[in-house]
Amino acid sequence: MSEQQQDILRRALDHDGVIPRSDYDAAWNRYQDCVVAKGYTKPVVEEFVDGLRSPLWHATSEGWSEEQHEKFIEDNGNCKQLEYLYVDEIYRANLGNPNQYTDMDTAVVDCLRRKNLVSNQYTLTQFKQEDAQYNDVATKNFTTDRYDERGEAASKFSFDLNDPATVTCFIANGKDYYFREDTSPIWSPLNTPTP
Image (cartoon, rainbow, N blue to C red):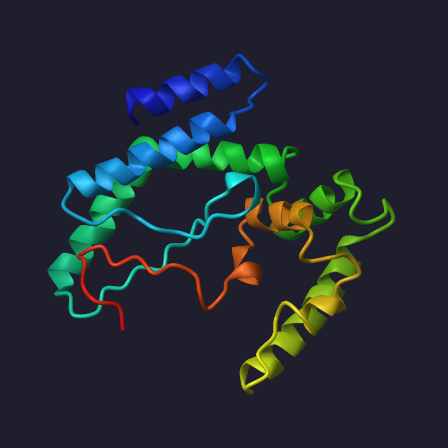
């Protein structure tokens, strides 16, 4: 872990574990610089509400040798751990899971309750039922030209899936797949043309 990432974590200890957005952004920028210094292009991921960045990058490795792919995975992982990983985890937890639930669905329900997006009577069981209905519609629509996970599928939730506070609850708890669009940025680390 870099000294800069350690400094952010030390400062957070002095402020009830809170990492300000400026430190989160600085850690992200150092991670990007690290990857560029290793010979790749600047990492690109989806950025959501509250500055949260998707933990999943859509990197294209078409045409790479196995050695190139393995080296990229290692280099990217090393940069992430060195500059950004721990800051990212704590920043997410502060926004969406301050009670440190290990079950992400429980963390989402807790976050929705804390942000008054659902009533205190809203249960994990209810969330799982609504989520199953969402997935049924999204899956059905995916196989047609009516793919519309934000419209018809989203209506299966009893809360507004598109509310910025809801987005934070989902993204902070690793559920960014609900918000992926066909327009999500594709990162081409070796600057090869995207398909």
